[in-house]
Image (cartoon, rainbow, N blue to C red; front, side, top):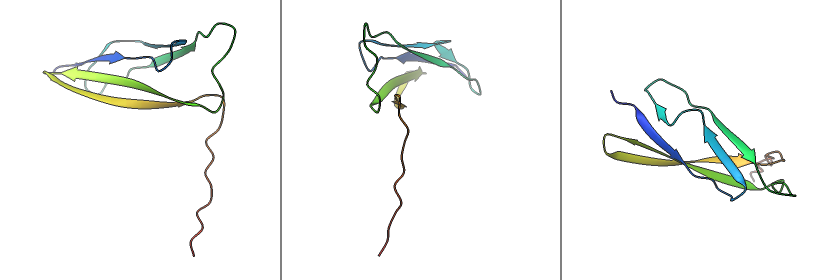
Length: 82
């Protein structure tokens, strides 16, 4: 089986997304490093960023969005049923 070639786009001009490899073999892993490069300021806490990752293999392409929450916590509210 052939490997998958990937491309990654940054969701913000000051946000750098760097994978440790641009190809992936079945059963393998890839790590992405996300670096805040905003000059003088930081990413706003509590904002969600979607990092699009596209994989191509055998002429087929698939894109998935990885969600990144900056400087905050996800809060789950209780469900109330009547």
